[in-house]
Image: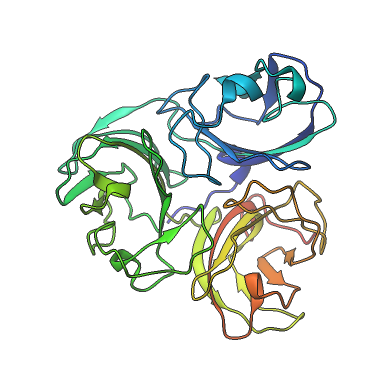
Length: 355
């Protein structure tokens, strides 16, 4: 497997302070296909836009809510209106009390956006029993997949050429949960974990993934309305592991402030983690919002809440290490999953250095 030596050509985090100018163009370093943004110092829902559904008003999805596409009243609070060759543009909404730009560029607010490169275009994919529309980057192992449900057990082509280990799936046109598939859970295909909730992993519904792990060409869906309701439309963000760029695994907490170390083989730029055997929140960390250990502030994808100030994690040259006894991240004997993307690989043309 070839190593990605410049991860920031495929994933990059940006931060900024709002100034209420509109339209506002942001520089990412490439033309992003998935943009996931969060207002940091105020409680507003997360905002997700992608190139397969398209950009503009009423195209937002919110990881911290079950709402359908456009449910975040972006016409009032601002929205991503399009992309450029090096970033994206946001446009002001009409709500004067929030300066009409609360989601993306209100004065006095601070923001973060996590950005992924797809194919900068789409293709029809007939690998599965359901034909899908896909923007796939096989180099970085990331694809965006849109399809329409059949209500019967089915497969959906993802375009990656290798089996995804992490999938986020959402109904576009109805208020339903975000389902997550994660290869770090041994019996993941028989159950589910929810991005917009604190629930532990559950095997209550094997009909989401049809008891079948993804293959190099397709992922499977059953008859659950959150994955394959008749005539409902869905969006899936699929990720396969790539050396020097991404890692999706599990760890066991030790309940100690000198916490569990997780080896990734690269210097992480972005980490998401979740306890799977108990009710606990998700947490997201990155290398830009504070940028030094141990003060890596967390936000929760399942919550609209503002960025926290707790000290939980060190981002290291070859992985990450927890510095907290909090049950959310490092409870003694607790089972956890993580998602990590690289700032720098450990070896190669652009080797990682310590923070």
